[in-house]
View 1 (tube, rainbow, N blue to C red):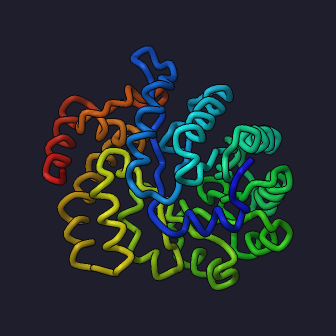
View 2 (view 1 turned 90 degrees about the vertical axis):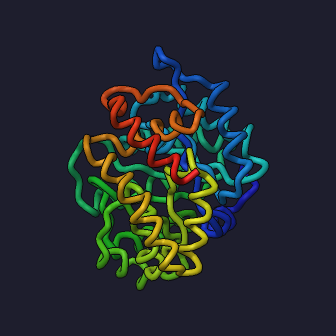
Amino acid sequence: MSKYTPQEMAKALGSGLLSFPVTHFREDYSFDEPAYRANLGWLSSYPASGLFAAGGTGELFSLTPGEVDAAVKAAVAECGARVPVIAPAGYGTATAIEMAQAAEANGADGILLFPPYLTECDAAGVADHVERVCRSTRLGVIVYSRANAKLDAESVARIAERCPNLVGYKDGVGDVERMTRIYANLGDRLLYIGGLPTAETFALPYLEMGVTTYSSAIFNFLPEWALAFYEAVRRRDHTHVYRELNEFVLPYIGIRNRRAGYAVSIVKAGMRAVGRSAGPVRTPLADLTADEQQSLRILIGERK
């Protein structure tokens, strides 16, 4: 059972940077739980405000339900005494409900609700999906708006009115008007999380729209850098932020953009570059080439 109410969980997450750890695989692509646990122990020695197990960076889309359960249980065991642990739910509504209820049983503190799988759907259908998942659990739910789950301001407000445990909105769309309307409608009723790929790029302008935190994939391999960048964003230190964007983040994005799916692959490559390998990514993703890995190693070496 979570030690947080949904509102307490949201407040805790909004107080600092968020950790979205990768999921460790062996060379035969099996889940390497001992390595995953050891890495969680290392990451949790740094002051992130929440840990999201088996999320997008953790390759949720490639994990079996049993592996998701194992990853969530491991995260709760290793980090639950220090930070809120947020578990994933996704795919169709029935599956998402099962995942949310399993997460609650496994001791998670909240749910990150991913978009439905494959099918096209309009805002009303997505809103009904989110509401049904919220009603299936006592945990606080953060809805991830991206891909085919782009909720508008009216839908978010309606779900928030009907479901007190909808406590967060993670933006993976990058629509400034949509984000402004949602915040103008709901203000502090929700926690707002930046969820665009390489969220550091958008952190400063999003802060002005009420987005106090974001999911840092870079935290996986450069936690001290990621925390320093986050603090610079919060104090609106434009000089620090734009220096790091120009010298590190934008060149990093240049490598990431070479191939679809590299937003995850480059994080595991970053971990290899700092001597903390998490193994390969699972197909349909592909690992960086040897040349790209070397370019990233040089880039990271300048920031260590």
